[in-house]
Length: 268
Image (tube, rainbow, N blue to C red):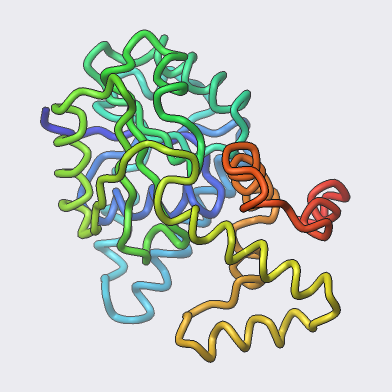
């Protein structure tokens, strides 16, 4: 199916990057957030990305304004009614995603694809929360979404081939590198990243300075240290993703006590 109007739910750092990427590729974007304060904050995040591109000479001010004009934002799900595909980028908690998917399923046209930006949850389970499991798929972006090329495309048990092909085609139109992976907890990248992030927290827990841990990783050629990455992504997101990995794989992903403490004391 031809994807023209695309919806995005959730305008945090990840959501704003997704919105900007879609706008920059010429798509009309329908954006939904919880309240007007969050809507305005998200729009400013998108504008900031365009401003950064303008300063680098990668886009003119006129072009940036034209692309921003293709963005419609609201606090109401009704704005997604005519979207061909909706990407949810809400917190990595199953109860939140369930509420969002059920409401999106109710409001969207029958042919619309619902894509989840989950980093570790079951796509089949998420699809089962809707009346259109064949149109539900994982579309896992990486932070910062407007820069990182990789997108994991994860079909559920009932996801149709047409849905898979439409999302793969969209990724390529966005200049991204889509990698289709089989459904499992953590998919491909987070099974590697989870151990990496846990080990970084174990090192800090053992008394190593965070900047030393990051410097060691960066010295190996990694563009951003694990602790800086956690600060950018949000340790709540890291916690929920790694908790899912622990529940699925057991002792291989035991959470560091420090990560539990950071999450439970809201230091994220």
